[in-house]
Amino acid sequence: MRQVTSGVVFSVLCLGSWVCGQQNASTPSLNPCAVSEQRQFDFWVGEWDLTWPGNNPGEVQHGTNSIRRELDNCVVEENFSGGSDMHLRGKSVSLFDTRAAKWKQTWVDNEGGYLDFVGEFKDGQMILAREVTRPDGTRAIQRMVFKNIGADEFDWSWESSKDVGKTWQVQWPIHYKRRK
Image (cartoon, rainbow, N blue to C red; front, top):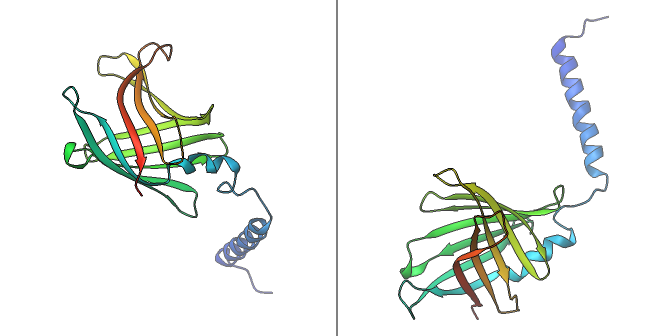
């Protein structure tokens, strides 16, 4: 009888693990991209013209946002442009995390910004929030609120709270209108 080398044993164990893994993979399981909550961000998908108050009274600034579903419709991808009125350009990816039962979003931009949010769709609004520590050491909460949602328009606002969410101050309101 020949002696079996450790390499052969390792190969057999790996093959066995792969076969077992394949059997487990074919067992029906919950597809996180097919849960009903995954559709909660469908209102945002599309091509949008944006308006927001400018720096001077009565002034209106303009931008665009392109939102699409990617990666087998599991990820909502955003491409924001402040247009000629604002230097800011950014991208985000959002998904519904079935383990946490929450929406999660990561934002990055051309100014070196990286923000991460967690939230949910409740009472007709999508609210994604994050805690921050400011340079002076004080803590605050920042949030995005998608509200007044209709088929072809809605309002979005960037808000902050210095009192653990008791009161909110709108920092940047944007009106979305679907591009036809």
